[in-house]
Image (cartoon, rainbow, N blue to C red; front, side, top):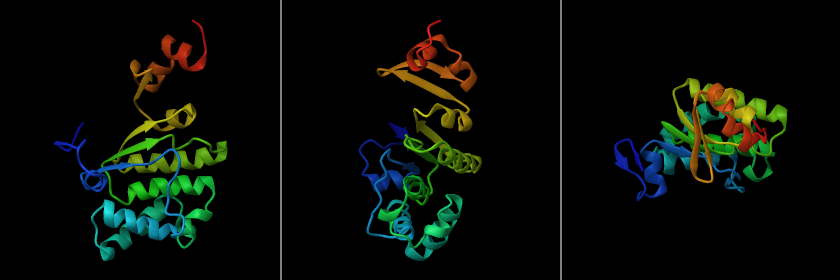
Length: 180
């Protein structure tokens, strides 16, 4: 896989981050005994390659962008699911990615929580960060994405604008159980 003109498959994770590739996990994996801010400092320092003094303003900006300012001094292990998902996103953003890989970030959230997260993802996208998002919560994906690529058992099923893909008969049959 090539990114930023490099084959990144053999690179260790911190080098991938420094090349501009950020990612989140479906199941948040924060450092539970550290605060939210400390989690971001680790990401910005080790993943993003910033010195501590340089990392502080980046982390403060990410806290604001992800709605975690009020939780900065909270232990990550004590967060709600929504805030753990936000922290997962925030840790990826603290590395200052150009490409963000999101894995089921809306999974397990209530509808109001998903709407909050959608707003944050739209703002991130508006700042020019490209996202590749694997998601089964379709309304969340459709609210943010301008292009969809649908797979079934490792094979491309459809690709195009959300409207084109969602009206595709194969997508309707496989993912929505609608027979044409």
